[in-house]
Amino acid sequence: MPLVQFLMMEKEIFLSQIYKEKYMKEINVAVTGGAGQIAYSLLPRLISGETFGRDTKVNLRLIEIPQVVDKLQGTIMELIDCGFEQTGELVSTSDIKEGVKDADWILLVGSIPRGIVIDGKKIEERSDLLKINGGIFTDQGAAIGELAKSDAKILVVGNPANTNALIGMNSANNSTQQWFAMTALDANRAKAQLAEKAAAEISSVKNMIIWGNHSPTMYPDPYNATINGASAAEVINDNQWIEDSYLPLVQQRGKAVIDARGASSAASAANAAIDTVKAVINPTKEGDCFSAAVVSDGSYGIPKGLIFGFPLRTNSNGKIEIIQGIELNEFAQTKIKVTTEELESEREAVADLIG
Ligand code: NAD
Ligand code: LMR
Image 1 (tube, protein in one colour):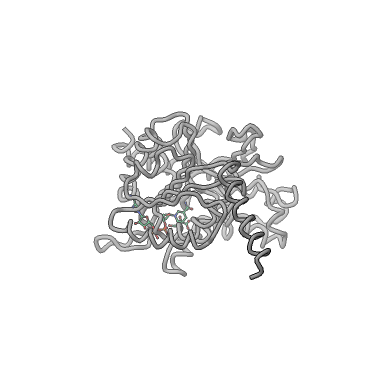
Image 2 (cartoon, rainbow, N blue to C red; image 1 turned 90 degrees about the vertical axis):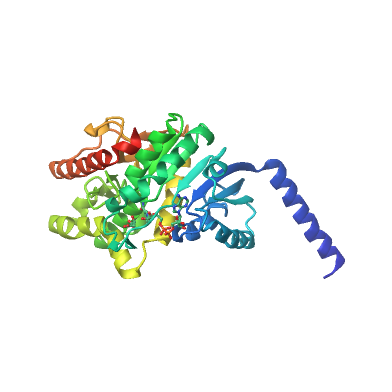
């Protein structure tokens, strides 16, 4: 290589290093279940600049159970080999306290998926995971409450996501941190179905609200969702399709993927986690919302304290609000009652874990 070209290259590397050290923001992100399927799709996108911005260096802490933690060395090698400019410090640990200390974001993915056999019994429903996974979230919640940043955001992906978040949030007992359970995958699934049925572009579907639980009782609201600004249900104009096809398909899509793939959704789940983080950190466009479950403040008559899927928006000052004043027809009210009751009974089932 000619000397001049070599020197130019060296200068560029040197300048980008200086830029990185002097001007880039820095963020600490912890991910549990770092060696799992979802994490494999998720991790590169957390450090590529796509999620937190090109001007933000991401220090990543990967957390695993002791039996698996060594495998994270391979994952870290691959993350280094991606060569992203935004890559900060990469750490693996089986110590949740080390993992979440000073974290800005914590993605709680680590937990057992359904579809596998435990003690000779196949885990069929997400709620069957309550007792198996619930216990994980007490210690993790306590560590987060004590050690993560006071404005930390926590996204629970591990199932049953809403009630795991409830357990974690109660253990954390830190009112300035903010807990979310993931329903963005359900929203993406619902948008795709509505767009296909209406032969519309997926980008034309807005205001997709997943009310309630990430479970077969969720209500993916087709009346308040819009296609090119008009109610999706009105555009589609086929109530039978909505009740007999659309709702069960979205509600049971996780199971359908497990049956077809032999493993729980991973790429689409990772994508939904990235969508959620982006939705939380960027202001929501006028006329739109994003879907995630957050602690109920009593909005829409939902009992306070439940982690419930609501329509959310991020304001220009970064505050996340439950959007008020959404009209709920009788059909919606019936569906929302069912999912609320399910979440109440899940809360009762883990009463010993939430103190
Ligand atoms: P996976 O089995 O491939 O990976 C889970 C990982 O978590 C494993 O590597 C395991 O060792 C680790 N783990 C278990 N307990 C842990 C602990 N206490 N601390 C740290 N790590 C721990 O599973 P996956 O496919 O990645 O799915 C993870 C979870 O996400 C499951 O519960 C699944 O049901 C759920 N999920 C949720 C959604 C959603 O929309 N909310 C979508 C898909 C999957
Ligand atoms: C999903 O919706 O794909 C996940 O929650 C996995 C599952 O168990 O359905």
